[in-house]
Each structure stands twice: as C-alpha cells, then as structure tokens.
Length: 262
Image (cartoon, rainbow, N blue to C red; front, side, top):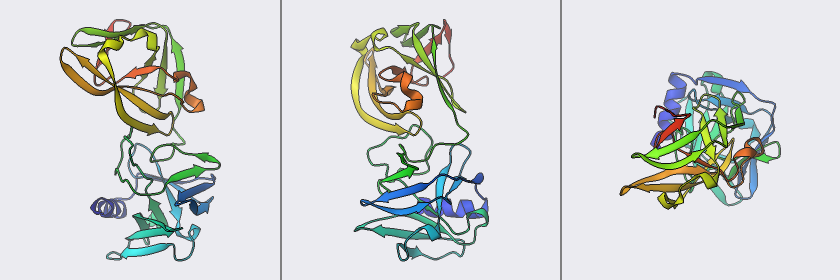
C-alpha cells in the first residue's frame, strides 16, 4: 500500500495537476454489483498525462467504505466491499482542498500491459468503469481533451532493424493522438512475416481497444512486443483494425525515406 500512501501525500501537499467536474454518469462494477452510481464524479489529473475518476463519498452505500488507516487528517486508506468481493486499493480524502470528500479507486489491471503512463499496476480493484452505458477499456478514463484521428496516407513507411527491411508500405493509416507521436499502421501483406513471432502480451487503451503483440527476431536479436495490432478496435479507431504498428522506439522507422528519431 506504500504507493497509495505516497500518492495521498503527494496530492495533499502538492495538489493535483487539475480537477474538473463532469456531467457524465459514472458507475463502478465490483463483484457483480455497482458500488457507486453518480453524475457528480470529478476528473482528477494526478499528473499531466491523463485523468482519473474520483467519486464523492456520498455516492457509496453506507458502510461500504471501511477505514484501514487514519494516520492523517487529509486522507486515509480504505477497503471497499460489496456482494462478497472487496478491494483495498482505495484512497479517501477528507480535508484536501479540491479533493475534499472524494474517493479514488483503482481498476483491476490483471493481465494487462498499459500503453500509457500508470501510477500503479494493481491486480485488484474495480472490475470496470461504465460511463453512461459504455464500459471503458484500460485502467483510466478517456481524457475529454484528447483526440484520436485515423487518416489514410500514401506516404511510404519502411521499417528496419539492423538494416534488415521488415516492412514497406505506401497504403497506411496514420494515427494521430493528442500529445503523443504519430503511429503508422501497415497492412499485414506489407510485412515480412519470417521475422515475427506471436507474443502473449495484451494491453488495453481507452481510445483504441485491446491490443495483441508480436515479437521480432533479426540477426539473432529478439525484440519483445515490438509490434501491436487491434483485432476489434473502438469505433473512433476502426480504420486500424487488423493493421500492424511497429514501435517507433524499438525499430528504425522511415517516412518517405527520412528516418525518425527514436
């Protein structure tokens, strides 16, 4: 629980990066039941990268939150229980400025690899978030200020590792995501499959869906999880379905012959 205590201390001394209200209906699923159902959730940016939902204490059933640690007046660790299932990945804020009377609950990250920055990789937490009637993917909600664009492009993309060409394509989908570098999704027929092997890794992105991965092996060197793809992406990212994306940071990527920085 040390990481939660450190987060509580950081947020109560330095404050969050930003806090905003949202009119969205937010529900949390745990053990087959909803532990809260509210239209008064707050977006809290613990850091600049993405927000997290914080829930008012009044949105929970009486007695659902059990205090585990009350060593500070500003926040305490808690256990949340419903229908025979519980999680102790809970922070409750008492007197902490903009976080006063708000509750932070983690979402389970069991078996997931995050494609974004994360504070923790807890395997126990909420079973899922629902915003209105949509179940969110990943461990944090979508940023209301973030946009994903999928645009077809005939600019040539060439992928190399150690000078070996792994893929070459001029029929691509360029994915532009606010605050992140562009990613290039190539057709499966443009890839040299002899260098690829399946990975067991999966990850969830709130904006794109569940990703699967491939490893690369070139000249005896193996690069794990160097390629990802989405079998069934979200509606906003539908154009990338089935296409392969090479990690710019793990391979040499050339756009119209110009090598990108890693």
